[in-house]
Length: 500
Length: 134
Image (tube, rainbow over all chains, first blue to last red; front, side, top):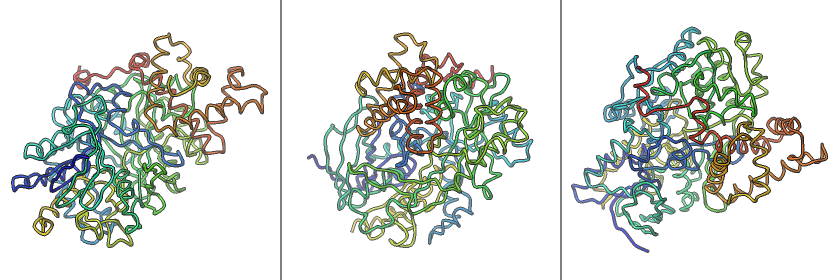
């Protein structure tokens, strides 16, 4: 088996791994060798086709449809040079101070997270879209929420030269989204960091990673020849594979015995995609899909409403029912307004990543009655927003009938009964996977300290969304970058000690 | 299809026509694309997932025998719809989830074809902003 000797191994190149690579890149000039091992491929520019099934299969694990153990949710998380930052919409929110207080991680303060978040807002060209670039799908959400007196904010977005393809979740074909594949990774590579794509790390030993390189038949070939490798890390290993793969890799590597919390406290922001139909065509798939969010129900009913606009297959599978009614609604695609709901779920020890008999991750997650209450309340609130925006009818997955007509706008709570919110029947998804290697005090309550160092393993760090002790309660990528920045700074500041 | 035996493929066609009626009107090329997408999705997944999918199809075929005395594909269309509606709302979570998975496969096979996007009025453009401002 070929062996490679480096000083620092970073596993994963998404929001976490990309930020770490960028912060540690100056160490290359001091003679250290830094390598990023990324499972996914680096697509050539012409391979960003915007074709839904093709892009989903190339940029997501399981095409964006990984089932949880009880099959009540599907999970969408990226696998690419740039990780999930290739396939998000670029929403760049700073985590609220109240959330950091709730996390209650010793040594982690809001001022620190805020400063690091601002750093990445600057690096990633985060700004608000000008009003003239906002399409009807977003404007109608704003109008509906305002008519109801709901509080709405505009999303800051990390775009440069956005041409409004609306294909963000399939990888921007215009190079506009400023993910780590556009900003942090190229910068790190320019300073001498090596990024090895199509490279899956299968196990971590004592300062050594076992990895397999296999080119998938698309994208640029890996910098390393296909085959198995042992990669020795003289200084540190940084695990940034995300909230499913980081805990799974550590479990497979035998760290579960000394870390009883490993894999636990997973939270997912369980999500629904809801649609309202207007009389006339609206602009919905031209222009950026995500401009506004409503946090009216953030504290009390524990959900957020966000604008969104998805593609035909994703839309179809998020509707309830089948047959003629379903087809009728799909044929009204140019008249559809969409809302994405995010339930703010609690972090519970039994919601966790496990290993199956084949050693692959299994996500064991149970939707609590409180989360189902939130999802129900969010359907009612969304229906009200659609009608307030002028929709002629609304499709709510838990509705008594496939369509709710505007004539029933005043009684949406009655026509969307809580009893109809049935997991398995209703399409519930998650693209915000958090926890599993949570930060905390010691191994009795967590996996790492507040600097991402794994308890009791001085050469092993975690730097991704698995660090979150609870959900972020907002779109998480900027917080992932902020925490990864902190992890990398800790490594850089202690490099002398770590080298010794 | 590599992922399913021929009898299951035929059942899938029958089910697809109830779930997305337009699949019944696909020409040979369109049906070929439909089956290729479903096959690709199944082959991309673990063998255990393929086995579960095939098992669910088998359950769906035989379950109506108890109530109607005939397998699913021999039922009239309205009874087929009644069986599917029951599955979607049935008390057993795993069966609901199984039906959801079946629907997802059929939707992927049909709506995942770029050729069908135009039929529902979906026509994204790289320069969508230009169209927005036109």
